[in-house]
Amino acid sequence: MSTSISPKPISFSGIQSSGIPSIGNYIGAFKPFTAYPQTHKAYFCVVDHHAITVRQEPKDLFENSYGVAAWYLAAGLNPHECTLFIQSHVKEHTELGWILNTFTQMGELERMTQFKDKAARHKENVNAGLFGYPVLMAADILLYNTQEVPVGDDQIQHIELARNIATRFNNIYGDTFVMPKGVIPKSGARVKDLQEPTRKMSKSQPGPGTILLNESPAEAAKKIKRAQTDSLGVIAYDTENQPGIANLLEILGGLTNRTPQAVAQEFEGQQYGALKGAVAEAVVFALEPLQAEYTRLMSDKAELHRILAKGADDAREVAAQTVRKVKEKMGYVLA
Ligand code: TYM
Image 1: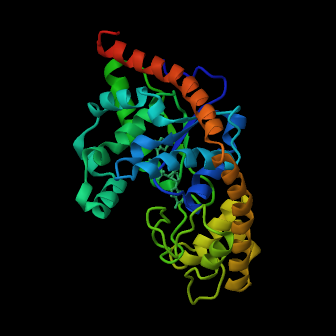
Image 2 (image 1 turned 60 degrees about the horizontal axis):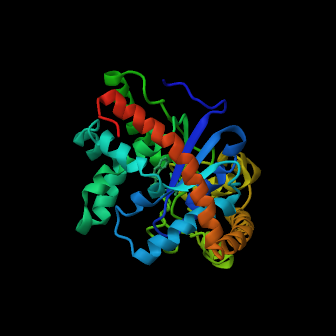
Image 3 (image 1 turned 180 degrees about the vertical axis):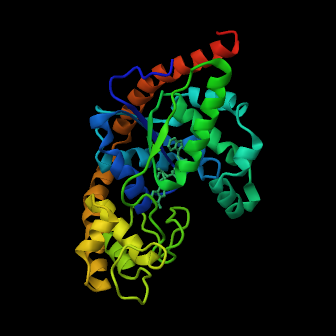
């Protein structure tokens, strides 16, 4: 049965609870997610099992798991309008992940760019979980009959793999999984490092090129003003020749719901300083209320826990049905 059960299309996305999210996560994920509950049956997940593929301090994992939940809510998600939960609270994720391992080829996983990047950065701990990471992500998505997966551009390759896994299973056992598709925002799908605008801004590589969501807005504004640009002196959206300017246009576009081209048009003929000033102002304008709400939410973990427990109860119902269906088709003896 590959048709959706809900009258609204189903969406699913997740954010890892490893470290403090960056403004890249906000523009590529948290912010665009807030539009989903109006049009979709939307699931949002705090992805803790994925976080442990890189070694985490226990107290940090604990704090950051509540933290990601709080950032989701601070960005504007209403928990009554979507399903917000922690991945490890729904055991079906690891169960389906195990099953899907047997439908995934080593060669496919070896081609994943994120694996290659992370393996190079964590040479001392290239563990099997890091290698199998995209299989668990496929399970996350396929458990909920997901049609749309809102993500930043770096996750598209993983979603393609999820589609391949689903197709392989469906070809063997008949229509079981719904085919998901990745959806990226029109601006800021890959926010770049402010100092090295040819690489992605990453929360795991903090420094002058990265703005984390808990950073002081004044410090964030300084980082924008010191962002690397070029000597051409022309404001245009040209990712090839002007990656620094293109990145600032993406950031401002993402924060103000416009395409980078539209922002470029607005600033045509102006100096880089004017653009940087406007980006800095938009970043401060976004961070201030976000941080105030985050702090408020984190001061009541019991309430956060209640929200997440309710979300896990809802998610589990659907996830259990999917796992049951999969096991039945494969010939497992059901409990
Ligand atoms: P994660 O935790 O690395 O990132 C969370 C989301 O933020 C997006 N993102 C960015 N967007 C724009 N610019 C950036 N510089 C930037 N950096 C990160 C990511 O694309 C992502 O949408 N594997 C996933 C988590 C995951 C997941 C899933 C996602 C697990 N299961 C199922 C979707 C569906 C990840 O590591 O995201």
